[in-house]
Length: 134
Image (cartoon, rainbow, N blue to C red; front, side):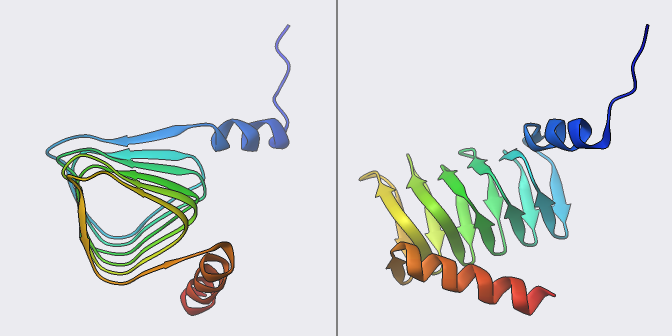
């Protein structure tokens, strides 16, 4: 009647999950996720995601971001490393260096720092970050 799930199907389900941190939440510490993550609150720490990050208009990140893709509408104070595409929407503010393969910035968004683009730049920076963290 009931069949137990194998470990591989459990792991696959974890990859497609989405984590949501609501408005008003304040988290101190690093966050790592294999699935998508949406943040509308405040994170005082680094954020690492193997999928897509969405930072809402009220989101504040005080730390570095490493992700596959990112849509930023809020504020980031730290380095942003994205291996695919980074979108800065609305009144997004990034105060730190950006390393990405592709970048799209709306006219109302801004960033203060250096920007390095291209697939080789992103791969190099993400590999260095992993080596430092290990």
